[in-house]
Image (cartoon, rainbow, N blue to C red; front, side):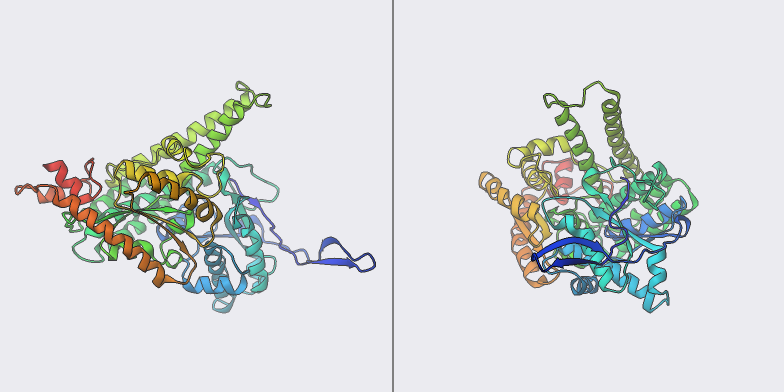
Length: 502
């Protein structure tokens, strides 16, 4: 994942009109050049993942010498600022992330006394970019417009191609970020550890006896991991310490709660806040257990797409790439090594914290499931994954409800996947599925629609549980150990536990 400067100096421009011929001539830049701070004095800003991951990336990168600050979680105020400075009809993630950046810079200027010129000179923002069949390709332009209009003309926005994953070319001439294998590994460790702590939290929180105890433990774990990054200590031991903390939470896991799988557009499913109406916490407050999509699945998808593209090109007749040339062999080795590294790292940290019986997405199987309905080569957004997750969840009985969350008018998700989902649902008439769009407003309607399908999910979970006979001599200590997650054909946690002990 290398970074390249995309419109690093957003310049105002003008179009000269040749009135005699009544035609527009070449656009010309009219902006003055800006002398930016050196690499050693530049401060990198980034945000937009889960609060846990954003909080861990900061100490992970600072530990390797990067000047990095993680932005606070985007809230409704961020959305309002984004709308006030952005164009109409933009993506929900754009409004939240652009507005969150502008809000942070305004605070530096208005409350901390740093001039706009100094902010522009010393700070830069890193985000995902790239082409695609949607508004995503316009993100950088929207950032530049909003920053210019907010009084931060020339503020640098750097992007990495989201759909190229870790296989991107580094522009060493323009990049002011010391991108290296060390940088990449620190980032991936923060991603994966954040994912794992979040996943344990989602397993534990719905069954906590004392409300808020899981949040307290997760906050303490965040401090432990951050301190370990800073001191360059053992992350495996730090995760083991977190396991001990999670074990102190009193649980009651024999409650038939419906499991809800959340899929959809990347940002809308990953964020935990106003960007998706605090969906995860809402579902838990309504008595459900969430199955989120971790960021590591997105990494595995990028690796799979790189592998698929390489394989497809090899099979083209007359393609310039030869199966046995060294560059192609090197790419194969890098792709395989990346996959093994991510999966191995996830497995080690998951074992240390006690996240048992959790399986990362099998991208080959998901491609096979979704490929019957969704063209694999159409890889905009999450591509075939939304369709594949629906089929997988139903066939393997992974959940009682599948929610697909996306920004309003999301072309890959709303226009393509949702249309295909209607065919999938006709072939799987018993599936409990709902597609939802987010727009920043309209929370009441959003919650109402979720509650309607959640009612059916609750009945399914209750009926599943009541079909089982509970052993009166059941070992409650074993049942309420968060690490005990047996394999079962049942979807619900309580049903799986009882089924395994019958």
